[in-house]
Image (cartoon, rainbow, N blue to C red; front, side, top):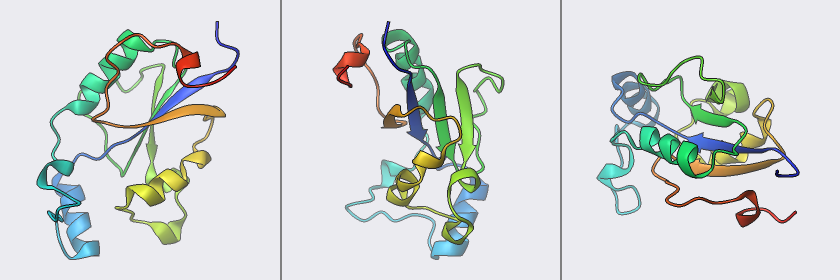
Length: 142
C-alpha cells in the first residue's frame, strides 16, 4: 500500500466543439494556429482521453482521483457520476481576469487550486497513455 494519496490531472479540450471554436475565434481572432509549434492535430479530438483513462484503470489503478480540467466541456461518453473522476472547469481554478484561457501553460500554473487535489499528483494530457503496470514509487520516493 502506498503511504500517500496520488491523483491524476488531465488538461483536456474538445477541439471539435463548435462553441469552443467560436469562443476561441472571438477572443483570439483565429480558430486555430497551425504554425509549426501548434500543428493541425493539436486540438483534433480523436478520443484519446477515453483510451488514456482506460490505460489508467488497467496499469495504475492505485490513482485515487482523476481530475479533468476543461473549458466548460464534458466528454459525452463519460459517466457523469463516476466515483473517481471529476470535471474541473477553468472558472473553478483560474482568476476571472485570466478567462477565457487558451494557454495550457497558464492553466497548468493554476492546477494547485483544484479543490481536494492531493499533494502528490501526476499531470497528463489526453494523448498520454500508460502502457505497462507501474507502482507509485516509479513516480515518487517514499
